[in-house]
Length: 118
Image (cartoon, rainbow, N blue to C red; front, side, top):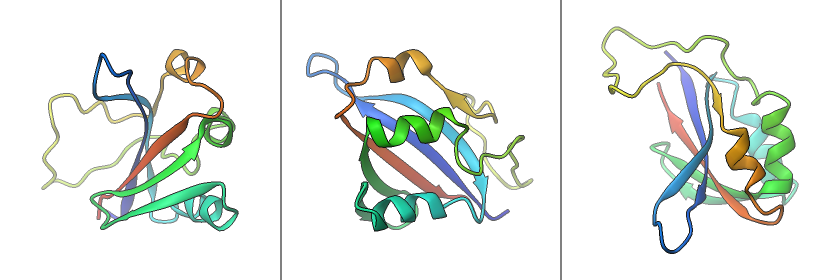
């Protein structure tokens, strides 16, 4: 299956290290264009990567309307191949934590992880 897995996360506060997951979704092979467009428009920064993941950063003010209008190219139902290993926490559906988004500062830099699922 040719697809991409997206995750948007924010850094927790100093007293609670780690990341808070704001949104996750899966797309088909054409679901990566929106990130490239944000970089081209200087609204996001590419931090590189090899597809496991590619990493980008953009501010809340850029990403929130994109995600809240329906994550770009999100699969209605997630796919997987018979040889895939699915972790126990895999739910196979798009998730958006609206409360966590509301707690983000508008100028806060968020991390976009893009995983190649081919």
